[in-house]
Image (spheres, rainbow, N blue to C red):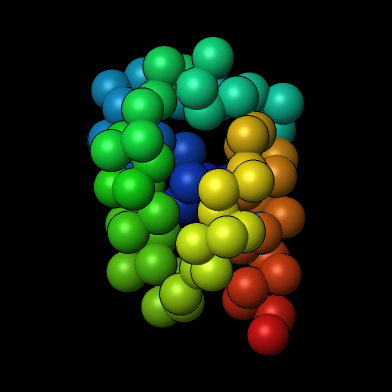
Length: 77
């Protein structure tokens, strides 16, 4: 479920094809996201999932898989 939500948001915000998004995909290198893009993705995730992510933890996320782990950890709190 989290992967589908994240993919949907990445497609909408970054304009990438969903088939390009895998757990080892990097936001910066593979998807070409900049800091504003990441902010938009995080904001949309927070709205969609009803959670708040700690900025210090978000800054360390580089891949889709790491983002999914953070989403799961945050939702389970």
